[in-house]
Length: 148
Image (cartoon, rainbow, N blue to C red):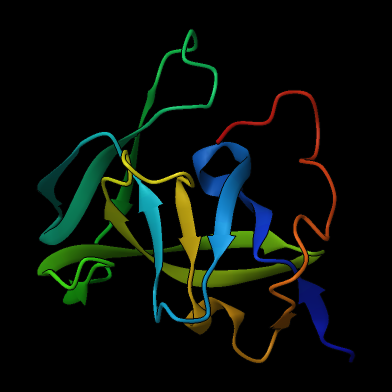
């Protein structure tokens, strides 16, 4: 199997959340992947901790949606400014370059960032190579109803 090459930014699909295409910065310097959420709240279901969080599509006229997922972990994460904070991690299916795989993603506000998703090296490992001189190697987002 040959390694697929990605550019420094690509479109990622998160089908469990109804997101056909999320604009993602591919960042080999980041260990974990992060997804922008508008808000999040914790709750318990059958003795298991879950998180309910708000996703907002790129079309600001479209309503945001609430999504629920079991909490996979809570871990400290150092942000780009060097600040450490505890984040909630979930596991979900990710589709990228024709591959479908489970990925750990932490939930955070990325409102001030240009990309609603950061794709870290844990999700990339043993699957992809990154050419930082290229961008959107995989092409335009799939479908007309894409969200990010």
